[in-house]
Each structure stands twice: as C-alpha cells, then as structure tokens.
Image 1: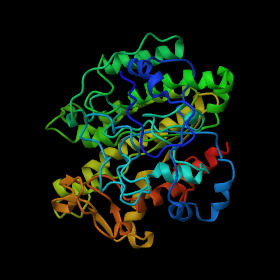
Image 2 (image 1 turned 90 degrees about the horizontal axis):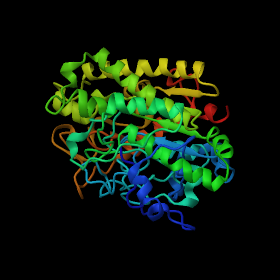
Image 3 (image 1 turned 135 degrees about the vertical axis):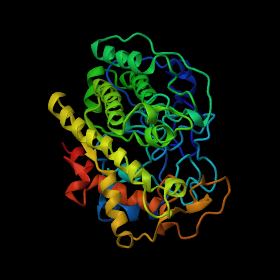
Length: 439
C-alpha cells in the first residue's frame, strides 16, 4: 500500500517555514503505520471573499474568531478531492480549465466549477483558509488538518483501477500494537498485496495509511503523544466513500465482475465490513468526532441518465436502491461505534435524503437544471465528462451538476450548509456537524 505525496497545489500558505515534500519522500512512499492517529494539517488560502460571505451569511462573525475545532481532516473521492490526484498518472484529474472557473485559485484539482462541500463545511467551522491537500502539505500546516481524498477512490481496492495503470507499491510494515494488528488483518483479508494506489488513485485504505504515516510528524511537532491524541480528539473528520464502489465497480460489468458475484444486499454487506475495519483504524489513530457522508443518488447523475435512463430524466432506480442498502448500513455502523468505542462521536450525513429534497423542489433551492451537466459531451452532457478548455454553461448557479458526475458549487453549498446545520431532522443521524463540533 503506498502513501502518496504529489506536487503542492498553487494556493498555499505564504509563511512556510519548512517543506515536508522532500524530507518525507522516503517515508511516504513506504507507507508504514505508526502509533496514535495522524494529521497533515493545512490551509491553502481563501481568495473569494464574496463566496465566503455568501456561504457563512449570518455567521460572519465567526470568520474573525477562532475555529470551532482545532483541525479538520477529510477523506473521500472526487466529490471532495482538492488536488491529491494532480501528480498521479490518472484520468481522474481535474487540474485543468474549465474546472475551477469560479474558484479564485483556478483549476486546483477540485471536480467542480468552484467550492466543494468540504470547502463550505470548513468555512462554516470558522477556518480562515482552505484545508489543503495532503500532497505537498507543509509542516506549518500540520496542526489544522488536511484533505486525503482522491478521485476514483473506493472502499474496495480494485475500485477505479480501469482509469489507468500504475506500478504496484510496497505493503505496510508489521504493526506495533493490537489496534494496528486489526488493520494488518484487514490488509491481509481484503487487500492481499494489492497496491493502494494501483490505477491512479488512493483507495480509502491508502488514505488511512497516509493519515497514519503523518502522525509521527504531528507527535514530533507537539512533543508528546498524549498532547497529539488530545488535539485529534477535538478535531472533525469527514469520511465520504462508496460512490465509486458502485459507479466504477459494481455497475460497470465491462471491467468488474462484482455485479455478477454479489447481490445488492451482499455487496452492501461486503462494503460495510471493509469500511468498518478501516474506520476502526482511524479511531485507533485518534479520530473521535467523525461524520460519515452517505452516498448520494448516483442513479440521477447525468452520466447514468445519459446511458441508462429511457427519457434522460427519470433516475435509474436499480442503482439508487442498491446505494440505499449501503447507506442503511452506515446508520447502523454509527450507532454501533457510538455504543462500543469509548469517547467516539460518529454521525451520518444523509446525502441521499438531502438530494431528494432538492430534486423535489429545485426552484425553491435556486436551481433550474437537474438532469444535465453544465460541462460535458453527448446526451445530458453526461456521456463524456467535461473536456479540457471546453466552454461550460454560463448560468452555472442554476445547475445541479457541473459535469457528468459532480455537483456545481451551487449544489455543494446547499449540501454543505445542511451537513453543518441540518434543515430537516432526516438530514443527519444523530447530530449535524455543528453539534458534533461542540460535543
């Protein structure tokens, strides 16, 4: 499993006292688990005051105050990747125009025209800078959190591997304690030597490895493992995995046989079992306040509408039904973790429900177009995703989807706001991120 560090993004903190990119190169390519938990903290820079004001709104006073939590760590896929795939040989990259057309930093690797949901959440938590990608993070960014997300990543190791090929990477070293033994058991059971970055993406297990490898530097900076553990226990962690395990695995029979080997119920059980082990690894390394971001209505994306919907409007129910089976297991997972893990505060963000509410009355949410990408090619602008230098639609704030798969900034703001402060009781279980921050 390879921990991957690529070139730094352009939007960076200007007072960098020391770069980790060179000093950690050997450590981060061997990806060794280390004690406690990890953080490669960060901030890349806010540059759009207008967007900040629009998102934060009445909470503007928070912008000049201390953040509600000391750090924020992000795990996920292309929905929240903000540059970790930029240095990877992969088709799953977005560091070219017109991606970022409405983002002050330009095309940074975000798969949207502007902000992602985690950008919005970090603003609402009171951070004055963007949480930077793990790739190229510096030592002075260590304490406030980083983004480990990688486009095309999944819970299963093979998910997304059709996008490119990459050389295999070393397996982790032997674990040092009992909790690490659980993680090694997971690797032996599910990975079987597969590379965490095979196919040009960093799978969830690879992201967990990166999180673990960073802890040595956090402990070194803080000078004490107990102090590091205490800090991590106050941080927010958001984890959003599973979309690619359906889009780029289960429902892609030309490349994967999971659809024929598992029923939807069996597949949801398999994903949940793997996910549980990796989330327990995060907990064993210090994560206590964890928001599990559910999988959205994949069957309503422009790509699925273009390829599988009879009229290009009706969502593909068989996909959404399968995804909901996985989401249901996330709710049970949250309850189990909160009951069994000392000090744990897990919560579930119901993206499927939030998405459904938006689709029921898009106009009431300021949206007009829900079945087409703003930028793309073919039916629904979804058969081929947004191409380099393609001219996107001019009224991006009225579109739900930016490209064949990913939401616009307008949609991300809506979702991010409701993840932070639930609008409906069904948006979260049991609490929203605002409440989680104060537990």
